[in-house]
Amino acid sequence: MQAACPQVIKLNCQKLEKDQQMKRLHETLSQTWRNIQSSLFPWLSEESGPLTKKQQELVTTLELVRIEEFIITYHGYPGRDGGIPVSGLLTSASTATVKQQCL
Image (cartoon, rainbow, N blue to C red; front, side, top):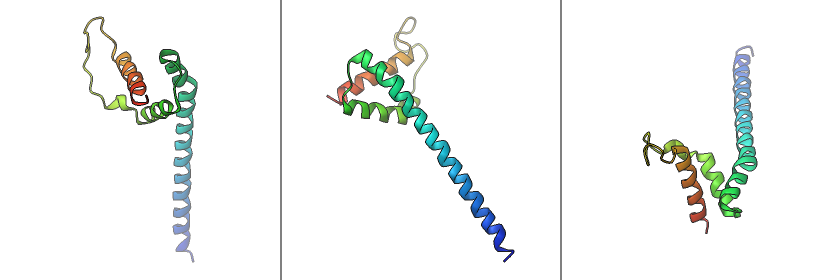
């Protein structure tokens, strides 16, 4: 019986750890969703007009995937000095993609 106790404790610890991971994931997703709804949707609507349901779905997907983290950029490109900042280029590209894909 005593040999089973460490196994039970280990299983309980694993369950607790998994529960904590799920709670952190839930909190992260909830915060991301609040940011999308309170900041990103209003900003995109202001820049490009009202978003359709499909556009909102695409924006949400792109935001969750964080596609900008997978795009290779070079300092000063495009336009070098005085050109569009990379963040502005990505934002413009994302907005254009949303509008184009959801027409």
